[in-house]
Amino acid sequence: MDRVAIITGGSRGIGRAAALAAANRGYRVCIGYASNEAAAREVVGKIEASNGKAIAVRCDVASEDDILALFKAADDFGPLGALVNNAGVVDVSARLDDMSADRLHRMMTINIVGSMLCAREAVKRMSTRHGGQGGVIINLSSVAAKLGSPNTYVDYAASKGAIDTFTLGLAYEVANEGIRVAGIRPGLIDTDIHASGGEPDRAYRLAKNVPMQRVGTADEIANAIVWLMSDEASYVTGSILDVSGGR
Figure 1 (cartoon, helix red, strand yellow):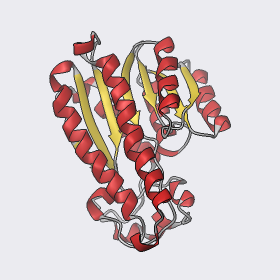
Figure 2: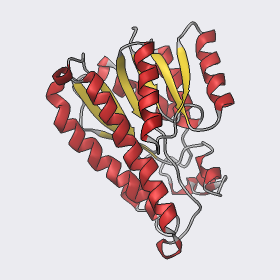
Figure 3: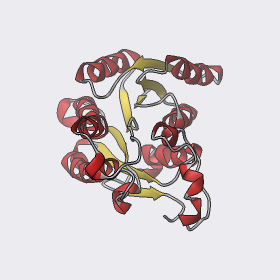
Figure 4: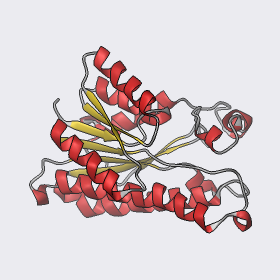
C-alpha cells in the first residue's frame, strides 16, 4: 500500500499507537503534532526502523493554516487514504459555573472545529466527486459523550457529543463518494491525557466503574481504529464503536 494516513495528535497516547498500527498495515503515516517534536520524531524513527515510511508535521488543529500545511505535506508524501481525527484536549476538572469563555472556546475550537476542518480537507482529496479514489475518516469521540461528565468536564463531553453527530452527518453526506466515516468512543484509557487535566490517576481511580474492572490501553483503541480503516470494515460507515470495557 502506498496510501497515506494522516493521524493528528500522533506523537503520544492513542495517536502514537494508531500511527504504529497503521504503519504495520502498510500505510505511509503522516503524524501531526502540536508541540512535542521529540516524541513525534521518536514515532517516525520507530516506524522507519520497521521498514515503514513516516513523516512528522507540526500542526495545532486550532489553526487552519497549520491544518492546510499538514495536508500539503501529506500531498507530497503520497495519495491520501485515511484520516484519523485524534487530536483533542481536556482541561482541569470543574463545574460549568467555574468555566471561563476562553476555556470553552479553546475546547470547541480544538476538539470540534479542528476535526471538521481536517475532515474537510480529507474529503476534498478522497471524494470521487473531486476526482479522488475514496478513503476512510475515523473520528475520536469518547464515552464522555454519553455520560456527560458532570462535575469534571461537561465541556469536553459536549465537544465529543458534537463529534458523534458530525460523524453521522458526514458519513451520510459522502457515503456514495467512496468515503467511509466512523467513530471510536474510548473509555478510560491509560494515556497522559488525564495528567493534562490535572488528574494523572483518574483512569485507575475510576476503573471500578468499568464492567471489565480495568482501564484500557492505547493499543486496544488503535486496533479498533485500524480495523475500521481496513477493507475488513468495507461495509461500515456512520458507525460509532464503543471501546470502553462495557462502560
